[in-house]
Image (cartoon, rainbow over all chains, first blue to last red; front, side, top):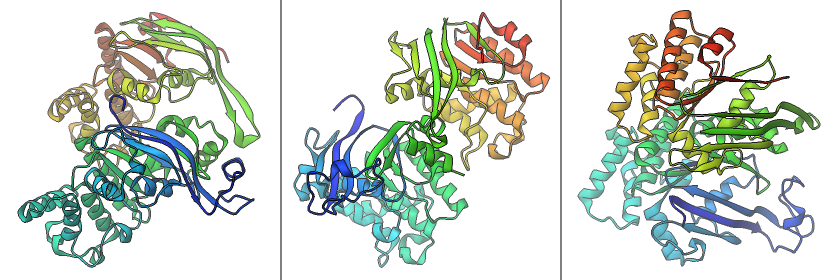
Length: 278
Length: 225
């Protein structure tokens, strides 16, 4: 792995269906479809490659069907890709993470990755307390000492501005903004080098969104975490991401510095997206 | 330190049936440490676009931009990898734009101090230097802990200047830095610029004020429409 590089994703692909030799060549941004006209297979992602440096934030933009959520799910091992490789610096360096045994993937994910889902229902268990949700992540990584779990949980809730009294309250009783913060606290539990954020502020009130984004920025700066931020909101991307990739129909159509994508988009679709932004 | 050769930028606007718009063509110049290159030309001649190409906010469509970094490595900024550009922006290339990066819920003081924190200084050092510069450019103390989104145009412009110079860049790009300033603030900003120049910062700047441009520039590149 090169100097300072954390993640190297190469040729990532995901298809739903039997597949045929024409799937890749008859779908994509030039055809404005993910569905293969010959066999009906859905090509959610194809030939996706990018890298991520330590401490960097990469933005991923695209509309529905772009594959941005599928990408995140593949990286977090929620979904098994159909092709491609993922290499990560540190533990398991030099090994294709996608080819690792499932148990090893789960350990890696627990210790070295955090995930904040768009819908808190996916990332949290609503029926246990907020504290227990965070503790679960610590347990997954092999921390079993009760005092340590309790202290670390308190520290994380404090760091994500969740009032201490909520530690024993289940997320279902809390607001959307609070639920997102619990997800963030959980994602950070094991000091992972990589955190994935999937539309983390969609559906939140504007003032809440500002605070959650501010929190993410501060944590990222203080802890030097690498992040992949998926959003359809250019404002969020502008605020958080150093570099951005633009996805359409499962492919990267443009990539570059975030300010360059926003001020000098060159691909027709990027131009359309940027010019459509309020 | 920086040498541009036959630099050009043409926009291809796909959304309007493929219109091609030339921002500027065939621009060449060189600037050394401690020198100021003025960029002049009529409105629409591409002055801001030129600066944005140097900063890589715009991708040049032709030509080269050879830059010698602090480790004496030569790089063509026109085609350098995004990671390289980000490093250079963080460490040694500053840009005074017309738009201050307003971050929700972060005070003016902290927004500025963070520019130093990114380069290995502590938050306290960053804040101390930010305070010096804020005082120097006449921003009232009462505003320092407030959010810049409510500041006036002139106040934001002064924040822009501080934001770009706080970590003493090797190369500074200036796009109309004194445009919305009153005479006193403009004078202070100019004195700050002259100080950086004496310390060896290379500068490339657009000023609509011809007198100011002649005063600061060691050489001028003239853009035609």
